[in-house]
Image 1: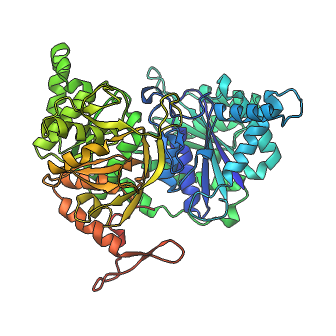
Image 2: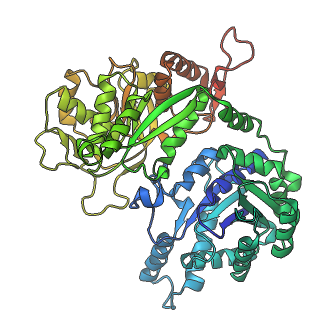
Length: 593
């Protein structure tokens, strides 16, 4: 197993996650099988109980792991399926070691950070690296490891010490360290300054790690004399100093690495030069360039609670982007704080109220994402009502789906106090209720999490057609409340349909309004499985309807499924439709693998 570690210096937010994802993609394009690990030095067991405003979205994996959003970047770029083991936190490691201590596994020894915590970190890395993530049964060839935080942070020290020991133990030909650092430009002099990077590398060396490659973030490409200076003072070959300068979109980063031959530097360090093929990034390059050239806009209003930090809805944003590029449209997102749509805002902040409603009414489609708590709920309900009454394409996800049901019960059924027991425990008309298997005493890891199966009840629904008229789909979940099964008959008699349910038939997974251009809600989170070139079907429906192309999207979705049949090994076989030249239908959206 070969290991590529990505660390960061000077400041946070330099894009280590995108850099690690891009490295994984380019190594995969060289013919290697790749996996990834994210190390988060915080004490939380996982990201599940963190506020999105503080730490960005909580990304959910197939196995139910609630993890850092960077694992979403890894999955999207490398097209892999990670596990909760691929996210290492200080909390997980200490919990593991302390449980062993309580069992007596250390035989009375004094349990210390070194060697017990550092050994546990190394064992975890090796164990997680061996987990297959690409559908095959054997381990990957290369593991990309991102070390969260910034060099010098006190909470990162045990991980840095462990990685220093690890590099010595696995050998220099199996360990490559890429340090992402900042090369700022002072406006006064207009000169690219290398001192912050020099100091960061010095600190890194003082902790026992020496970088093999420098990935320098800057506004513009590094000048040759700046590269030479960094090479001289950081003791890194000049050809191993690469620039990650500002780009129109992050899909250009793998192309930047390829242009500067960063993959060759990595392969040299890992002694893999003779085993690699030339990176095949033609489709990825096409997608990145196409995204820059799109000019026909599609405007989507995202009505959420956490809009002050856009990373709170990172996967939603990426799913919309994947879909708009697939439909050859330029994505324009209007982020609307749900609270600004409410009557209280009209009194307290009339300008924000007026601006929010102007954006909502000017949108081609409306999306209400997931969330928790009371703040902004009435604004989301108003957005769902506006979309329903004005025939605006609408997609509600998780809480967004539940609120669409509540709005329908209030407006159409006349149940003005209809609500969720999450929001009003004493409501007389509970449309959304607490799931019986949930915990009311513990918050972390107690929701209905991970990949669950949804069975389609009828093939004539838009959602079923978008999924290619399959009998079921597997999507990722994160919720502890559900649509009240006792209310379903009344809602259905009033025209609302539930074309997707779980295996019991009692848990509502998809809600749909048949006499509407596109009004769909999903209890699951379809954004988590959207990929560049393989957008989520429900997002395809939203964007397609917003562009007036839904019928075409539905037809293509059914054709793609009909043209792809499972082989005995479980992979999809591409077949050619009768009369087609040599172009398989299954590449309609295949911009990149």
